[in-house]
Length: 226
Image (spheres, rainbow, N blue to C red):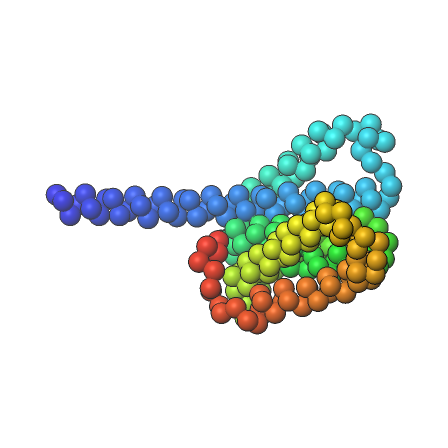
């Protein structure tokens, strides 16, 4: 009797674990598709100088449309889409993390440097984010991580380094603004756009080095699983 109960409990745990994994993958796919659809819409708005408000379309209706497209895409993938496009049905979680967080942040320093030196139209920002989603989809659904001999933990480290750098920059700017004797630095070459751009490019090198060279593989215990 006890053996039967134990087997039943193990079966229930396995079933519950599988269900939670599938639900998490579906949620990840939905989040990634929302991000993709929103940036495609914003790229269209930025590129054509037309806004939903100009066409008399309420912003709420636009977001409902975005959510509807993402929902339909997720449902199609979960039903038969993954098989038709030969994608990994368990890659939704990695897809969301890579597309929304890790890939955009990994190259944020060089993007910041370019924004200091050049006038970049907003449409290019959205196109960059769309490219991150497409790359994230390949890495997550088509074995891109394995093909490039990469691990998700590498992108976790790049994300953490970029966040740390952003906090340092924010703190330094706050201190320079608040402390009177140091405020004069904001008007010198020390904080000129060219200097900051060079620091940002150097920071990009640090991000890539930490994420893909110096840190041992799998060294982040809290990496989200597929």
